[in-house]
Image (cartoon, rainbow, N blue to C red; front, top):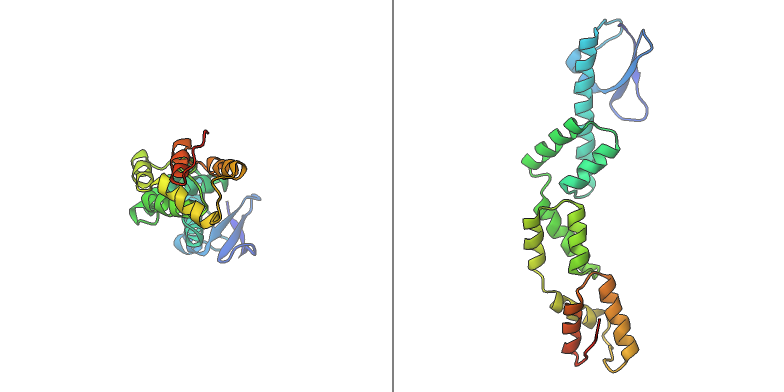
Length: 205
């Protein structure tokens, strides 16, 4: 097949559309054009086309993955899912995940610690946090380490003091409402009851 035209691809910076005489076309980065010395009227066979396509796809996924992690922190699972949804091949995704892990761009332990800190600020309890970490396929050892570092009982008391500074333990309706708040956010009934006993209130959950 022969290249009959190479033109800039307007949707992406530094990308070009290569059109062949058999109506086949491919979108590649500038690096691909340079590496394979692609130009108008150049003839290539199917094997060369496959090499060009593979190299271009590798560049695309690496560039896109860098773009993603520059915007926010990802777990290995969340980056893998995002790349898969964009249509990249599993073998290319696995290679990116491995490389980014080697470079410490992906670190599930750091991700877990940051996620826990964020969810705790949102008044989320251990059960909720554990489910979120499991959703990211966080290793069970990391999961245990980061969740065991927090006292749910003390966390509940701190939230009550901050969110409900005028809490009246004599008001059964208010007590039940606050207890339900903690249950919905993934705190255990045992820790909730223990925290309420701190205020001289026994509650059945």
